[in-house]
Image (tube, rainbow, N blue to C red; front, side):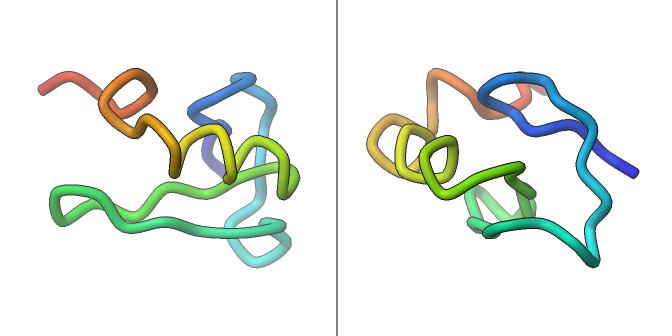
Length: 49
């Protein structure tokens, strides 16, 4: 289980509505709208490490 980086909703990886790769990390999304927002500006939503 992980969280959608856009809306913070719980997401089960196997049931994610979409994924994106950013700086070597996979992000999982609850819906296509959140994936689109992330893809347009990943730096805003990506984990800061």
